[in-house]
Image (tube, protein in one colour):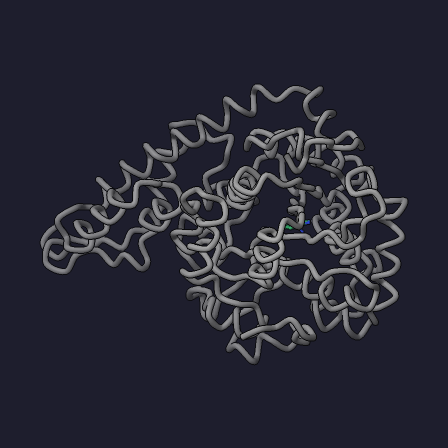
Length: 408
Ligand code: TRP
């Protein structure tokens, strides 16, 4: 299916009924009856495209490097117009990457790292500039944080983002409270003029009780999708393509951006979208920053990781040794297997574990031990990188400056 035409007009406010209770908005992710999110349905409903094997192989060919594990394992599973971006790239045209984070908490969890790890791979593979938006304004409004606290959290979160290894010569990190203004703000107003109250209620599910800050906010997340919002990077060029790696719950913002783009004379942004990283307790939704036991945080110690995985990682193993040997584990619901799918890079080893565990020859404890090793190494590496990030480095990433080598 090609959807270069008008964006599907989806009314989130009503979509709960259509999908028997599955709700996916930027603020709420919940599956039907506490079950799993049905991603096929989501693709249909949102009108995006499935990221299939031929597209993954195309990315491998163009970048001359193996596909990232998140592509191989279908973590990034949907897209909009990715083929167009690749066509343009092959013709020698430029594009830039745009992603972001709402700084709602001090410590990021594993799920928060997923889009940044993937964006870092895209930046290295395509050698393109990247803008990262920290929506301190958003979290100030939605999480009821003070303006000052949101600003502080944005700067702390920037350090975790920098620790993911971004290249300062190709990366601009900005916070809304600092950067919104100038052409960026002009674009917000251009966008705002195209979106009626009716429409924004429909796309985002706002109600009459929501304050006006929330209703205007989507223009802030849409503006970075248009290249002239960054004059220090792109001058007055307003037609440089934008590719947005994000979790699929952010799709409504960019549906809106794509909808208005042709009307204000800009290119539609392309998207590459991921599924959600499951909570330790099971796959019903996203992890929660406010429930420390639902997630592994980047600040967790080796001991925390071990305890949480042993205690909370939902097991698909049978409840007695005999039954387990007879029936094997249910891999579909097993969280350790899911997490290894994200972070154990060795395909052969993952297959081996799945076969043995699924056949009941391997037990939950062994799988958990391997997961603990993998996560401990990942978190340890992150903590060391984070500790090396200085205030000067944060200032360097956030400086409004040209990036002369951003396409080299
Ligand atoms: N709204 C996002 C969040 O709460 C942050 C964000 C801003 C973002 N711009 C983005 C995420 C672009 C992905 C892509 O996390």
